[in-house]
Length: 289
Image 1 (cartoon, rainbow, N blue to C red):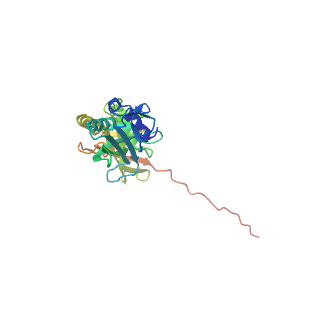
Image 2: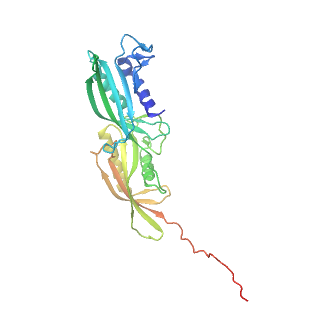
């Protein structure tokens, strides 16, 4: 399923929304991008409200660190007071849920704003919520890979959690039930060190996100990782070489969905390629009389 299909599946399966929305073709009145005409046979009952229409705009917003925006518009009769309950149900349904479209990176959505207005010429009230779409793309790159090393290290400490890039992810992960870790490369720089003729040295900064709604649990969990890394003083990479810890920073005030709360700086080395021998070339023979 693509992202639009996942959002539809998530909303239409919610029991609260099923009881509050009108019905179309035997399903809750939830539509992607546009409504069917009011005269369509699929409408069941005397009214076509309340109903929901959502759309996805996958235009990157650098300022908000988002891969796009999800708009969810809720429509009710002006005399109805249920729109507030629908808004609460939609937020609860979509927030703190990791969604994994087929062949794409996982996504989360974060509420950004809500706007209310009346539909001109109709006795209809609308509330439209905008959610930032946040993408968690795979960050593994080199060999040895500092991001993969940190991800594997965290998985050993908390095997019951999901670590992106290590574990397979289904269509949905409710992070309130199963916390999700995401490691990404924040910075990578070449540096100096011993044996420079045989080893290239790098300092990598890895940002660690803990996607979980409980602020207290996030702090305790990340503080425990921070402490263990400080005690170990190194993280063993997948080629069995050490990445020595150069610095740790835990910022509980940072946005856990966008920025990550823990930054791990480590120094590691990559063996240089073997020195190429000089080849004998252009050998010829000359004959003289």
